[in-house]
Amino acid sequence: MRTFDRSRALLERARRSLAGGVSSPVRGTAPVPLYFTRGVGPRLQDADGHWYIDYAAAWGPVILGYSHPALVAAAHRAAERPFTYGAQHELEISVAERVQAAVPSAERVAFSSSGSEVVQLVHRLARAFTRRTLVLKFEGHYHGWIDGALVSYHPREGLGPREAPNVIPGSFGQVPNVVENVLVAPWNDLGVLESLFRAHPDRIAAVMMEPVLCNSGCLMPVPGYLEGVRDLCRRHGALFIMDEVITGFRIALGGAQAHFGVTPDLSTFGKAVAGGAPLSVVAGRREILEQLHGAGVAFGGTFNGNPLSLAIADATLEELARDGGAALVQANRAGQSLMEGIGDLGRRHGLPVLVTGFGAAFTVHFTRRTELRDYRDTLDDDAELLDRFLRGALEEGLHVLPDGRFYVSAVHTAAEVDETLGIVDRVFATLGTPARRADRATATRL
Image (cartoon, rainbow, N blue to C red):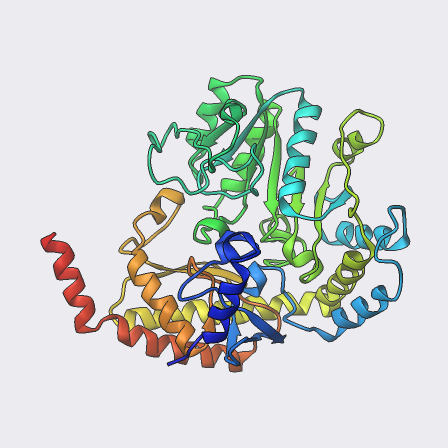
């Protein structure tokens, strides 16, 4: 059995200076928040010397694996120059042009540092452009932690009827009137969306969604849904915004909008766009983005477009575009093999396993449902069985996100796929043990 003594000691030290002991609360996972010392390709080493096949990818950014030579070289070159100018430099243009070349919606581009920041920006741009106030978002979709976006993300109580969900703030300390500026709908249901447009005529500035619901189970849009949302927005004078912080430069070089052939008015990007460096992007229609200059829409940031992040982004986008986008083809092919293999192993072991998503980003669910269409469907997942799976996988050398999400990078090869499926096979074999059956019997009696 693996021990995590060094990680535990570092956590105790961290708690004496760092709030909660971690820099982001979601990282505080069982059995202990792991401290890492090294990453190479698709593998990580923790402070206790254990190696893992990594499927967390730093929560998504590491699309080319850890310590990719082209990214390391770009970082070295950039580090020999000023880290930031607070002024213009040519890399801003180069990276913007690369984004334009890849992303269908990118008539113009703006840079910031985090996903939450660019969400704030697209909300402001949409409200300014339409002269409306309401933003419609969907249950379970995550658009960062700012007050105006963190609503109805993972509510468990007080959801309201499915056809008219309550708008539920996501944190203590949010201003109470946040609910006055947001509408919430179930995803993958055009009928409810159309009824909300009718109920709020000429008031909805934008409809915003994850085009694949990666933050709540990696759920795919039903056929025709994205096209239907785009058409409803056009008919009612609202903007269509895709939050591609996860799907961008992962499902395809041009993001989900290129993969599905549906172009939004505005898009947000982050994570994989810079291969692990802090960078976020807004891309969209020229006349909407140009409101930032001379039209009174405020936007700023000392580190916007900083040379360090953009140098690594430039190298990342060059690698992703190489050989016709072969890197993402590899990532999605490897991930598809994992999805199919894990599903087969679940059936072989008699476990209620459902794997949803696309190759480079998918989630393992333990559920009796045969289909998951929206956030509320995921509430039936067996959290206890997932926890046992994650703990067993960690002991065997798999590093997976705490919601059962796998991010597959371009450097996961057939060897990692085979090794991973061998580990999953062994862990699944332990989940149907007599102890598990006793747990179920006890739960039934209670």
